[in-house]
Image 1 (cartoon, one colour):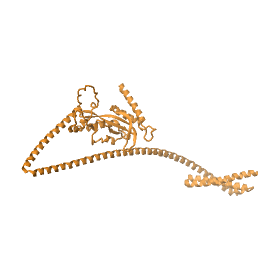
Image 2 (cartoon, rainbow, N blue to C red; image 1 turned 180 degrees about the vertical axis):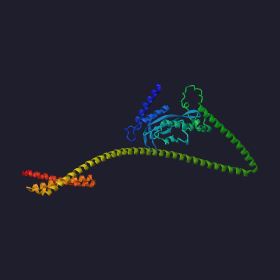
Image 3 (cartoon, rainbow, N blue to C red; image 1 turned 90 degrees about the vertical axis):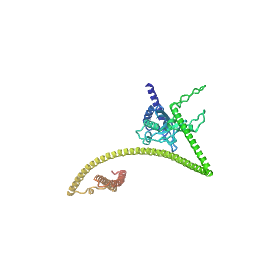
Image 4 (cartoon, one colour; image 1 turned 90 degrees about the horizontal axis):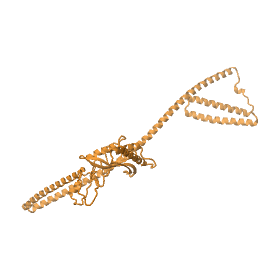
Length: 449
């Protein structure tokens, strides 16, 4: 248990260092993996279940020519054929935005293996297709992927042993054909992959493994079947030759020419059939290759679409947050304006009362026959008259601005018109005040206060 814990700690440290060493594609100065903890947890879980997988960092070339530095796990996953365990070599590439994007998985046969042609889930380049990858979601993980591939490859192995030449005996058509026999008989077991030391004198031949024995038995059965078919074919040909000889003796030259014509027609027919079969095989291979290329391109396009959709979702979510914040500010500002409106209404009411009082007072004074204020004011010189006019105009403008504020509070004037009038009167008041200041300065120079 202590050794396992030490190994787990070492594996975790190695995984962490490899994950942190992968850069971002757009900015190499930034660490690439967005969900580092998720990548670390899924890789640890996978390695704990499949001990032969080793984490590494390498470069993956995509179909569009881009080269990305990614974390990958190389090794073998088990598959069981007729209760015998075999090892299938694989490479699993973990993308930067994992688990949003599914891992890219390849079957990587060794030098003494070949990929099974027209396999349902593996193309000629070793690329793995499966519904678990096409229906990948954030809840998917690497362990379940490898367990699923192990079950699928156990039913239909994607690799088989390549043909191996033997120096002790020449290769025959039967042995060449048997080397491409069933995938179960051609898989390499772990024991068959171990090199054997060479020591003089040579050791006695080692006992074949169960898989090797099964392959030899299949080869022997196929060889015997071919020999039996050859013997039957020879007997049939002998009977046909005897019949033809009897026909030649009975019908002489006419029967010989007819037999030759039939043989020529049959050979032409067989040649046409072989040509048709070759053409069909070539078309099927081309169709499968195009299907693989189209599927890869569609997968890349789907990955790009998903990535762009996620980016747009994040941008829209940020905009939504901003809009919610602005809406809250607008609500607060509206509440403040409502409170200001209440205050202005109160002020308006007080001003109305004061205006009414002043109107009553003025009417009472006029009834008594008092002289108007304008007649009570006298001017000693022209500057005094001009100064009085400026002060009167300044106060009139102030009254006009107060009336505009009251009209805005009563909503009898719109905001645009209010701003235009305020700007106009403010500009006029500025010039009036400036003229009044100049008149006061001039009077001081003349010694008049």
